[in-house]
Amino acid sequence: MSREESLIRSLVDMADTLVDDYDVIDLLTGLTDRCVTLLGASAAGVMLASAEGDLRLVASSSEAMRVLEVFELQAQEGPCLDAYRTGRRVEHENLRSGTGRWPRFSAVALQAGFQSVFALPLRLRETTVGALNLFHVGQAPMDERDVVVAQAFADLASISILQHRATTEAQRLNEQLSVALTSRVVIEQAKGVISERAGVDLAEAFARLRAYARNHNLLLTDVAQAAVDGTVDRSVWTGNAALG
Image 1 (cartoon, rainbow, N blue to C red):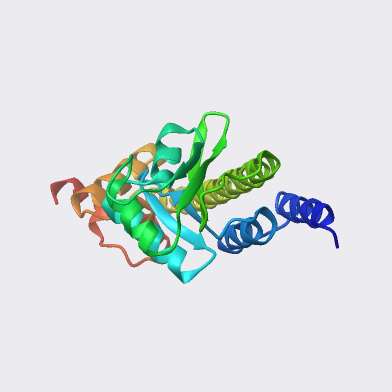
Image 2: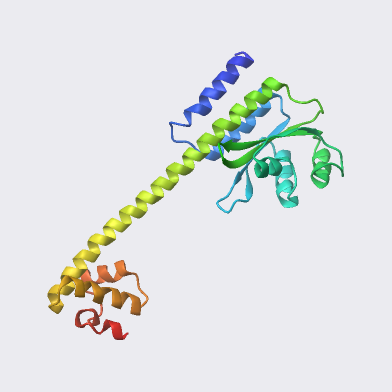
């Protein structure tokens, strides 16, 4: 298979994640491997932003790369951080120990055998979810055609990650809605039980249910379930729940 065919196949494989269930870590690990085998990078790594907004290492093409990326996070300086914070790519830069934009990071990168770096944000429109680091053992910049492909990889990864997050969020909201609807059914049943046993209307039954839950620091749904099961304290029937 030619390099061009391999590039096309890689783009197709990554695009498949937009419709199939997939593992984010596996996707990004594959991305770093493709950057090494197809784009001539010596090593690659991906960081993603947590819910709190701080970057975390999620994939790397080698152990040396992993250690370097961890140092970048600890030192809070380096190309991946800059790409994420600005939302713009960090152009090819030759590293010099103890100087430049990232003096501490550059020293460690050189010790690991890397002499230059290039970084791309994982970004879709106004949302930046992480960054991709590409390291080289030489100082020659990447071919512009390879930069275009790297950007395509980064864009597809960004879309996949955001889709995954949206799907996860939708699932969480659906689960919350399901729980809420189930809870509402139990509460309605409890209102009926209290109304019948205490001889009060449904509005008063609900008021007694809420008062008992609040005064005993319990969840309303739990008290309602106990009322349906017949295990709740009798004060919920008599209306003395508000007295504590």
